Length: 261
Image 1 (spheres, one colour):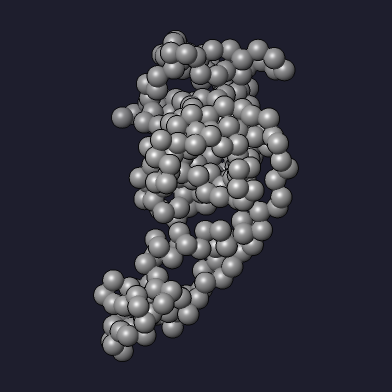
Image 2 (spheres, rainbow, N blue to C red):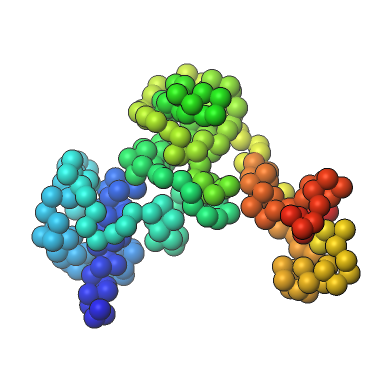
């Protein structure tokens, strides 16, 4: 593929990800992402609209050059991915909190993601029907989303739940329906989200000296151990993802090769 074609594809993928996951693409966003002029950004938008005329519609209001998804929006250049979206926007001035601990098993509906994204930005409440193992058919809840978290191989939103008056993690793939809601409670500070904790990891004490040295070389760059920082709310996901033993007397090798010191 020629460099010009790759550049055009990259621009089209960016447009489709912004439209799908944020609900809007603007001239200004294209200028920021690709370092182009106002005229060049307008040409990129015009080119995309010519290639995929059914996908965008003009958003009328405060300023010109804003487009959202039409009812017939169907990505023609991109394979939509939340992971790809966050990689594209990692250096953007429009930032949304996100934590990442790896392997995406969640089938995320872009509309659901988009509404949560908007609620985080505008501090709105949402009414969702949420399915769980205890209630597989779903229960209605009003939540106040705070941030996204990629944890335990799934995408979650960290949110204050009015029904329990607690901050909880909601698996995006288990949200069955979603709409704007009137807030009945004011969310308190999420202390577990705001607090950063340091986890001290060491080779499992039941490993042989040679096995411990192997783990040090493999995971700790030859040192005795490694300290990692994470939000208190995400500790359980980090320990699970890294297969860290919290109780080395019960959680033993070979399943667990490192432990929480």
